[in-house]
Length: 262
Length: 262
DNA sequence: CGTATATTTGATATCCTTCAAGGACGGTGG
DNA sequence: CCACCGTCCTTGAAGGATATCAAATATACG
Image (cartoon, rainbow over all chains, first blue to last red; front, side, top):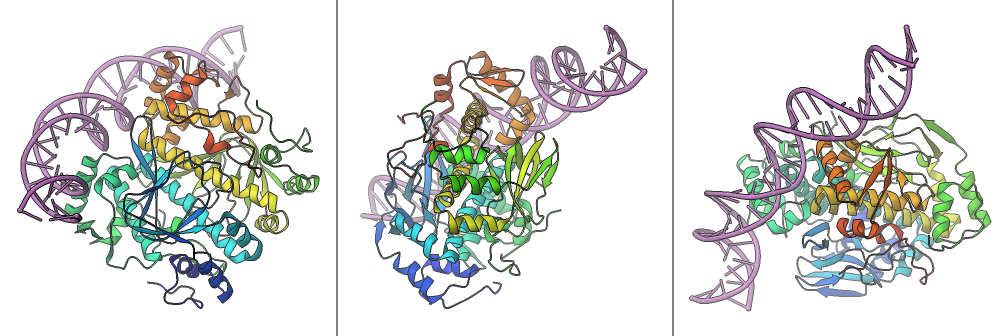
């Protein structure tokens, strides 16, 4: 792992602090504010749906532990997973604007959530410009992930999509200390991967096996690894800039891996 | 059109002011700031590519007139249009964070752009909390559009996608006074619609014709209209909340049209 | 250890793409 | 005013990627 900006971030820091701390030098006061903001917590069990499409949202959620999916069911009965929320990710950062949620959310694993009053977000913007900038970046990054998914669904083959998606998860998990250079534990079934990438379960299965045979992917009891990372990145057209570019210091170009565009 | 919050917005207001003014009561000072922010302008001709994937972005753009596409070309040579930027839309609102652009952009029509120094955006956040909130909403809305596109590409048929997309454009154009209850002028070729919705030109053509035959869509010399709006909305599963929900006043529920979820 | 859940595999159907070519339309120059 | 040319739209035929249906096997869980 490349060196990143590290300030006074305690070992037991929350994922949020860890993530923001990768890119910005945080003061002790800022770290403290971010941690105390998370005191009000809730645990959701695996499978629990805690946000319902169309219903009013009263608080912003911050994932502390576990995997969350945000999804929508179409009238035709198809489920599409809009995105995966991992520790350090906000859900509903902008509920000040939305009267009702435009998606549902449920827990893929037992998860721990911080419940954050919307007024806290406004307070961050007033009192901590650096943190506000960090939140803006997280919003931007969220948007980048969606763009990349749109590109995947619109212009990449099934195998490419899936591999790209797994590389995305690997990068994101590494950013919060939940993945190593070896790989990561996948908390998704093949059906869920399909719902996320707009593919049928059967086709996900076949594509996964094909990727395995071609030695670009290895999954063993839920642990995902990439036997030949460079080839995987090349095959999937994975460019991690959409997840990593951020700094308040123009000299710092973050990111684990950069792929030159032809 | 339903009544919206109207403050002291001049007749010749920019699209940006018009859009924000729909949802927020703007003071004369705020309107003034937004307009003077746009003094530095550039004109791009039809077909001009003015943002290049991978290159550094120095300023934020604000579309004043014309249609812009943001897109990416995959190594396989496919172009995917990430989104359409219309008058009142920012491009690169968060370049403070990104060292290089992760997409290209070019003009679909002759267009006029305001060039905005990134520092202006920071200044808005410091000095005009209401406007800052408006910018956040625009970012959120941008994200919502991408979500909805992901849902389209992942879980809707070709005809549904296209119709959904056209309904989206109609709604967005109406919000800046570029569409009427009758319909709007489409500045996209069928090939571009395809690149936007992940479909081949041929299939776009056939789907369009089918929609026409079934009286859900009518296109005459580029003017798009919907003979039976309710049926079109129902068929495309179009719920305009992702474009319209915003207010600083909890009582105001914006939006032209609302579809009840089953 | 039994039952539910997840993965795997085969066969068939469908949507969409690709390739190829003809036709309409608008603009431009003679 | 017409001929020409480029761009866009349209249509037919064939192929490919992915979906659907169905059932067997494997894995996880209480």
